[in-house]
Amino acid sequence: EDLRRSCGGHGFLMSSGIAPLEADFKGPNTTAEGDFVLLSLQTARFLLKSLEAAQKGESLSGLTQCLEPLKDPGFNPAVSGRSYLNLRRATSVEMFLDYDYL
Image 1 (cartoon, rainbow, N blue to C red):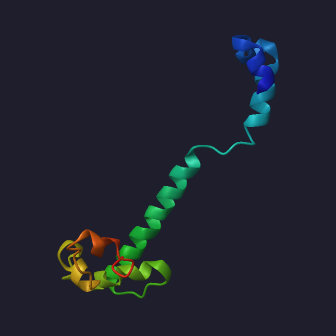
Image 2: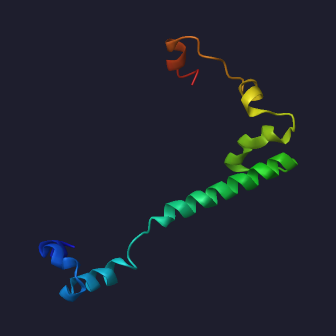
Image 3: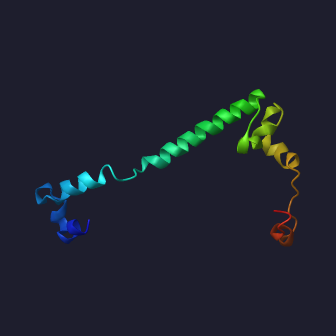
């Protein structure tokens, strides 16, 4: 990389001999940006499968147990979520900053 930069714009030319060396080295030895996309898609697929399992009433394990309330067909997270989790509304800044509340 330093050698290519020291040649300025000519370091990018294939005729310099530097660009092919860099391509050979960097190609198989880099992590592509697609890794994040792939992991995100796999995570989304797992969560959707867990959601379907919860809605069918199947048992869930691990962190997906938080989807247990979805076994009830009448459960609406926007309406029933706070009461299901026994959450109180913060009525003051002090209450919000209290670790027991959080």
